[in-house]
Image (cartoon, rainbow, N blue to C red; front, side):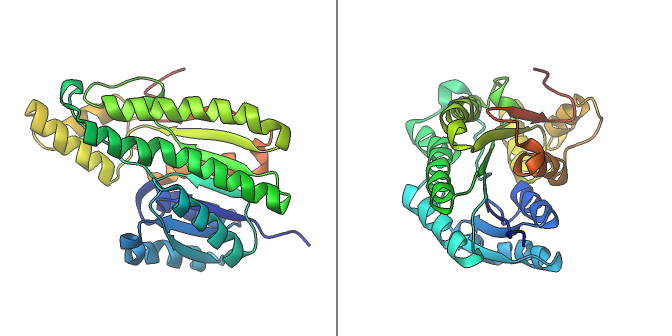
Length: 260
């Protein structure tokens, strides 16, 4: 009998994380839906969607910047769902500010969430993979800003370049264990994060609300804004056996914006 596979997705209450959780459920995974405790009600929609697909789901409240929270989330999901095969380190935040105005407090906020959380996720997942005798898959959120730095997004770009470097380093260290480590790099996704970016750019450059987003979307070769489902398709591949010979890669999923 084939063992049921389990995936933990952080930031899964809404947005890209919800899209990923639902796609992995569609692929046959039971899902640990991880997000801030305050997002538990929002996460119910994700859980309901997973259950409608015939899969199990549990919510785990977690602050991804805290190592203990990540470790407890991995243990809780493995215990509740009976296994642990994939972690998707999806949670992250954006900051939109000119480089000369970035404060110490802002750096102290973005790096623990966007970078430290990936370290903690990798560490906790690998300990669980090894405990269970699983060749696991680690998939993390990068960005087109992990390949090309963007003005007014200096802290965000720096954090995502760090994710790309960590992905490459961890992949090499963990290959002897049979674990793969990859990242996905979305472009302009139609979620609340880009609403925030558009609003902040409006405040900085004075363009009407929506204009910055419109101009950026017009630069996409495929001619439309990205959806969480577009991102989820790439994560689905990286979480599947189809990617068994892929590791250390940051895969662009941006509709044709950045080419590397």
